[in-house]
Length: 321
Image 1 (cartoon, rainbow, N blue to C red):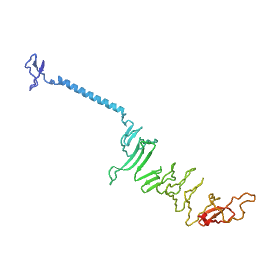
Image 2 (image 1 turned 180 degrees about the vertical axis):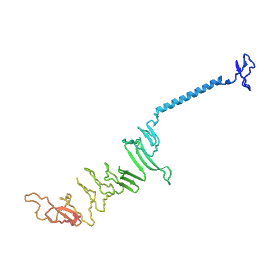
Image 3 (image 1 turned 135 degrees about the vertical axis):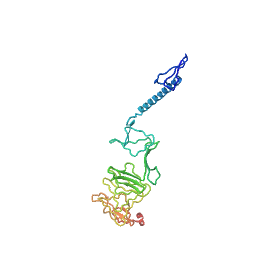
Image 4 (image 1 turned 120 degrees about the horizontal axis):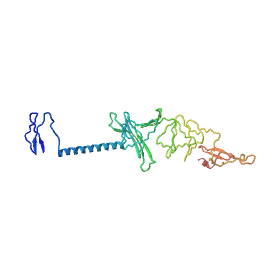
């Protein structure tokens, strides 16, 4: 049994007919007109609203779970803090891709460590006018051999590489024109250093208690200086050895040997052609004399002989050749 309402032009409804199945009643003036959704439409609407509510609650729960796992807070994400001046990282951070930044520094009083399993590359791109935009101009590359991790190399590609101290004084500068060392002392550790070209320096010395060796394996070794070359050893000997001849040449001066004693132990001993009577061979006590006379050939060759003869050789001077 349903009620049927027929709106009229006036504010009253007229009851026309009443039956067990349909009746028309009269509405009072000013009463609201009843409206609504009933039946299967109402149930579908409620089911749709309930489904939307479940989806929204699941999204909120998933969002809260992700925020909790990533340690997201008002200051940033996890150990990452974002502020107006940049980004602050409290603990270890792993960069899986490229990292682009204008400046990288550590907390005051704490060291800065860049660690990688294989290599670390620092790239500087040039954006100046007249050059290709984004072209890599300077590279600082650290890498190690995958098979041999003890083999570590450092390569720098730049127009100029400069190392300075805390006072901004240049200690080491490398460019296409040459390499300059501004430090007071350049110390080379065990293993030495290899130079493919010439080296210019005001002083070359070894550490206290260590030897200094200058060697050219397959070619000549030259030491030149416009005002002179000085070889000095303050605590040990100076040794010069060669396979063939050792030449000491002075163009406009003299070759001087100044020492309390001058020893030439391996001079050749040549017998003289006219030995004189034995006069210096024995001392008064009968002990044989240990002195010899040093003779010189016309070509400058020195030799020693017994003290009881003249400095002349036979066989046409074969010994002086």
